[in-house]
Length: 203
Image (cartoon, rainbow, N blue to C red; front, side):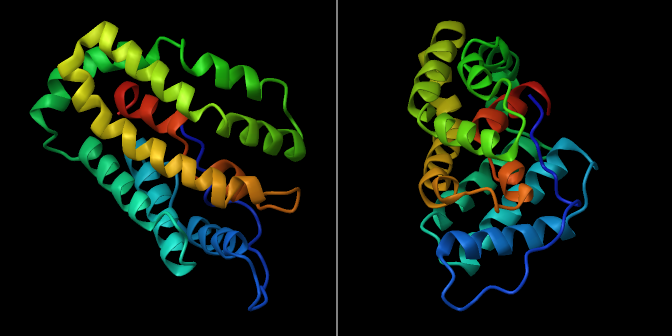
């Protein structure tokens, strides 16, 4: 599944009062950053821009997931580094089979299926947030079955930070979304469902 990073399209939000919520602040800062970011250079470039905007907005708005965003930035940098780790190269093919077989993402795809309006898509994202722990267990089981327990430990160094960030974004951003939310946020914030598959099947 390709990560959806719609950075260069759409209007920026207007001036927000000093009493704006943390989620509104994050939406504004993320959208402004995303609107300035170059797109369609490569998957790694898009992922790096996505996480950079997430970390920047989290810092500017004093969100509760600054450390989680920083750790995901490290995950993306590890996966996209020119001289990738020996373990990554050794296990990548096996991980790719484990995460790319469609079994774990099927439940998420079913939740999002047929949702076309912004309201429907937002409802789907909120429902998907309730599946993060199940998705993690499914991915870990797949990797253990296909690649072994030792490899699963290494795989979790990628998966766990993504899961932690996704949970925070659900609580602090997604559950506050409404039909006035910028689509740059709706489609642009990092998703464990997309990134963990992209890292091992697309990069």
